[in-house]
Amino acid sequence: MYYSAIMLPVSAVCGGIYRAVIRTLTTRNIPLYRCLSSGGRVLAGLADADTIFALSSGHGRCGVAVVRISGSAAATALRCMVGLGNQLPPPRTALLRSITDPHSKEVLDRGLVLWFPAPHSFTGEDSVEFHIHGGPAVITAVLQALGSVPGMRPADAGEFTRRAFHAGKLDLTEVEGLGDLIHAETEAQRRQALRQMSGELGRLYQDWSHRLKRTLAHVEAFIDFSEDELIEEGVLDQVDISVCDLQAEIEQHLKDERRGERLRSGVHVVIAGATNAGKSSLLNTLCQRPAAIVSPIAGTTRDVVESALDIGGFPVLLSDTAGLRESPDLVEQEGVRRARERVQQADLTLLVVDSTILPSEEQEAAAFLLEHLRSVLSSQDQPGAGRCLLVLNKTDLLPEAYREKLNLELRRVSGLPPVCLISCQTNEGLKDFLTVLQSSVKTMCGDPLSGAPTLTQARHRAHLQQCVAALAQYRRYRDSDLALAAEGVRLALTSLGRITGRVGAEEILDIIFKDFCIGK
Image (tube, rainbow, N blue to C red; front, side, top):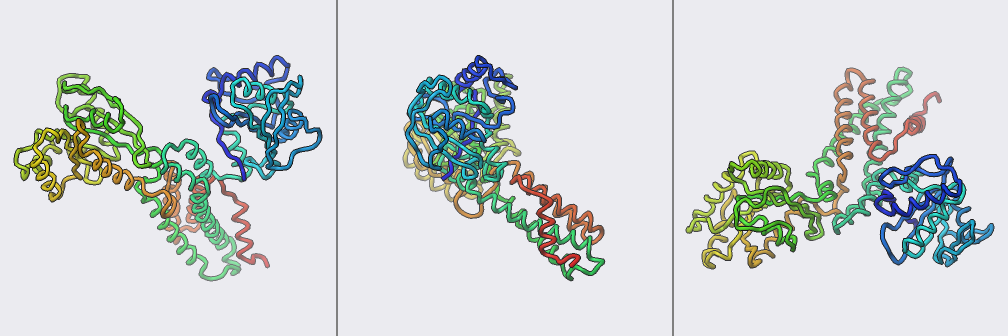
């Protein structure tokens, strides 16, 4: 089993510890070729150093801390700090040993040591892990001792994973999946990140890349050797079919309504409505804390108040906004402008309405609400049924019989967004509202474990769009200029290669000579 981690910026992990390491190296006359930035991030290390080390288990006191070493001097560090002589422990076997300073021979701690010889390690290099006690003094002492070993330096942020990528252990999509897994805060995010880290998304793109390489090889072979009658008939017809099929698959892949990206970054839900409708009360109820000031004075909320939530395992960024109304107050005008801007950018809008202003006849309520939507939201802001939930607040102030008739009436009316009747004061209807909200959020994010893997990064989408445009270039120039058409296929292949980080001309040559007996 391989161990894996992305090293965080040192300033976010243990800046003081690393500064102590550098001070120790300086006092021992060990040359440095770079220095620390003002933020405390280690930018580099020892002159000509190839082996890196870092704390992998994060910041703060803990029971166990993991220090990782990777590079050609990892075995040397293990021998001189654990007292193994010329022997190395069995690979991937935990041994309890005293960890000592290589110069003073002072015992620094007693912990587990693990040896991962190349290439069977996370980075593909010789690697060592020290599992030590997680106190700051212990961590500092061990890192200082490692820094005194010749040929070793503190790792840059993400350098372990970068080495794994260069060693072919991970492609870029798997690297991104690993990063997402480390930062996952909800169950759905964890599932999506784990699926991507397992290589499923990368394998989909690699399959497309392989088909494009074969297609490009056939086109290049036709251009170079067709006049010598060494190429079978119908090669370009096969290329046409392949390009058409691949373009259709990628275009379908792009029609995902940004579900993967939305799940990765969070669904943007905006609470909007007129003043004193109970927007801030709804925010506080959902957050279960006083995140926003609640007051009977209209226009209390002037700026956007944000809070991150986990709703049914899905990440949500909830924003409370200023009440939408005309106001002579310049500050409130800016708040209203920002509120309308957020509604434009929202994945889902919770339009809160004070139910006490509804007509006394429930039959007139639907028409009133439609008119209220138009008056509160401008025509360009007004969301459709799929992007809006209509939340009728303060229902505890309505007669019970009226509430029941109103609920039945609004369910029968078409053209209205889904309607939820709640009371932030008594929490009445909140459970049903949360069920509807969770269903809406789940629909927007999708099930991360079902169907084909989805796009999770904006850069994936940009490169795939470039790929589709390049394939369209092939079809546009296929009959008039085959060289330009081939360039379109090459550009498409390059765009796919930029997603995974793997593309090369030698692979195309290999396919040419494998598929065609050119030159006999």
